[in-house]
Image (cartoon, rainbow, N blue to C red):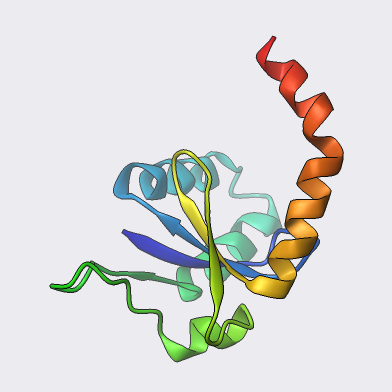
Length: 114
């Protein structure tokens, strides 16, 4: 699996944990960006330097490097947020903002399933 420092959310940075198929999908999406777009190089740099390949240890735990934990302001308590095909690791206080935002938009989002 791959851990990526993910600064995309307006609540702040989290860590996104991608299984191999989602990592491959992310790389393919980046490769679809035309080489003439300067944002492609930024994405490749940011995600390339802000990610690591890792495995669970013998006890089934995921070890987070100190630099990544610091980037996401993660210390002792975290929230694991399942996202169906990957999961995110959040600072508990930041996740409260994420959860409030999600609840505010839930009605409209559920209409996508009808």
